[in-house]
Image 1 (cartoon, helix red, strand yellow):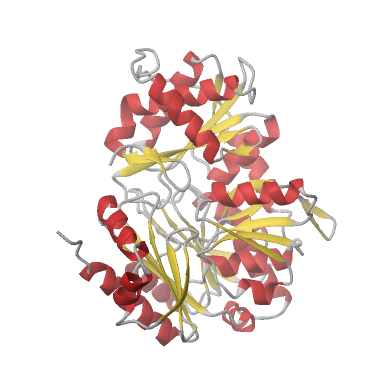
Image 2 (cartoon, one colour):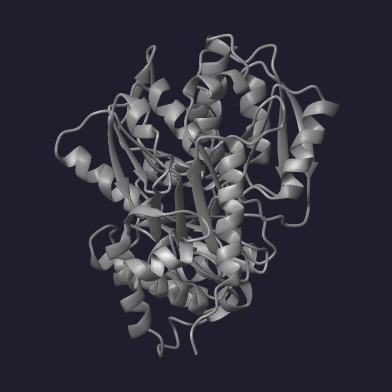
Length: 476
């Protein structure tokens, strides 16, 4: 697949991004920043990366391109994406994060930030146009190794300080919390933060080779590990993130992974938010259980951030956004018991992990007891990997062709009551169950999301949905 912008950032095969493509897009980004008055000539761009094998080389190419374009790169090393965004926001810099997040190890990506936060879809289009204009420019495509002043320690300290203001001091004393480290760039910071709150932290599964962990579609292998660790180490919770630390993974005391949208919902309650922005793939029970205005968007943090900004523009206070993967974004600054948590309009994995554990402890509940009290519909999701983008597009065209083709496709599953087309195709069946088909914006994958009243019904619906996708053949 060619390098292109997906739901969040530029994505492509590592072999495509290593070399001239990363130089080209970094140059286009620098031109965009100066041309749109987001940065003056000589302005600072903070750069960080994840632990993928290709990330250091891409980051070095990016820093060289930024310097050639008249801006000043600073090197923030190996830190989570939200830590990079917070540091850049603090010093008034733009930022570039080299990461493929949760996608397979043979792929990588680049995330871009203006000084005021993550770029939006209009910015992506502008950068793409500039890259096309610069495609034949030798200097814009030149591959060199660049460097910048090392600011990893300063960025790390700032992010730790933020996260140590979320809960009261000692809030997690007495808990045994496993940290599934794998190859997450957030692993050492997580151990530090949860240990500082008084928890006994048990490091688990550290890897020196990259492991793609999708917090929205947890693999059977990962679920088996979580279950085993929870029993072997008598844990109250296990926490982890995806590769760049902007999506949380939280498992309860039984090793069961919790839904990311539940983590976001608990965070919204903990912070006393008044406006929640979340994609259409998040649990439909949020509206009925929340006590705040809920705004639905397409999938992807740029869409969530755009709606948060609209809410702020019209005067809303207490604005928060989150995705079904658990990545949580603060549009407003919140204050809890005199502790200020500054706005950070990019996905963060630390805040939702902290607030759900803090909420459980404050109420003397286990995590499973907290989940039971929310009583949301059972929502599951999974994906079919190596599902070509062309095949995904053909399937979606088929389903959208007419009500008859959609009804025929879903006949083995149930009768169609209604459907929405905000992002993919989300269908409510006549018995209230929900099934949603959506091509991934980041990888050659087809995703299926379902909701049902019970776990058994949800598992059955998800299995039927995936089987229907696999069995479908385009007409000749």
